[in-house]
Image (cartoon, rainbow, N blue to C red; front, side, top):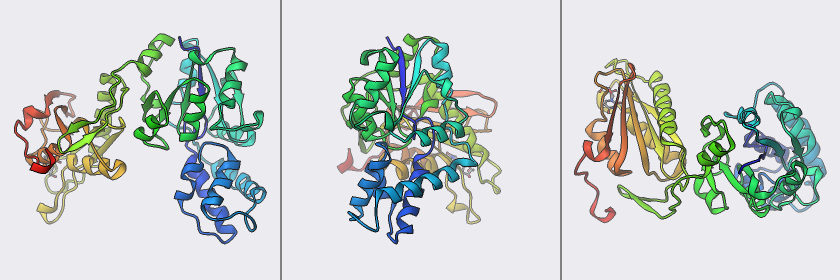
Length: 384
Ligand code: THU
């Protein structure tokens, strides 16, 4: 039975990892060193000390002009200035309030310094009193990926690891939660689903807004952890994909994908045909949703359909694709299906049973499987 939710802060409750990296790059440039975002990739989520010491060693800096103290001073003033004028709340942080209503305790367990936790909470419109307890990197000797932060949070809340669920977004953070014995739900705000599962996450979701409404601890348990647990690679067209072992409820994913397609539809560039199309694909490996709209061209043949734009966005972000669901959104009645060219592109990434949802602006829905639309797809012999 879930009694407590333990939230990492950066990348889970607030969208701050990108800002931290920007400020980190600025620090190195202030000491005459050129750093790229890659230098910080494994340095996230384990507190400021590791953030700088690890990135410095990746950059080959083991002494002056680098010092942790100078980096830390620079970081603090620049970070506070960077978030002062914006709201960095990530979607779905109302889960903190929803958990309380369901009788579940909540804590922040952040490896960051207290000043950063304070600044982040304020920028996200959260108060200390919204949580039952807050642990920061200064409350423990050994920071993440060690287990101490989560252990301390559980002691303070009076719960054990079987009753606690950790929400994390980085490899080090997932490890920390696992070492404390908790089940960890990973966001994909910072790492991809496959990396999160390899690091030990029990469930992977895109962000906190992927958690549908729940009114009891048991309902939340079912949403997060019930599902098939296969982690084998499965053929999606010409692609072998390891589908996410835990999934969000189907109806919820459908609503989110339809909304993504509708939003993309609003951006359709169709001054020639006046026929606006939006599309969304759900990635089987990560559960993430990618959208696209049709983009027409003065040379008509250069036009690209919404579905193909959605698929190329997914590939660009993840490097591979297995399609769990594809939504086409248009003003057509009955709702338009994908054209033959888009079906051929889908053949590369879809399973016969992949759901194709055709939706119109009048909210009419047609549900088909990919094999109903394209019963005999062509896949190149060496890729079958
Ligand atoms: N279109 C799509 O975006 N998807 C389809 O599957 C069918 C057609 C677009 C292309 C063009 O901009 C317009 O609709 C008319 O063909």
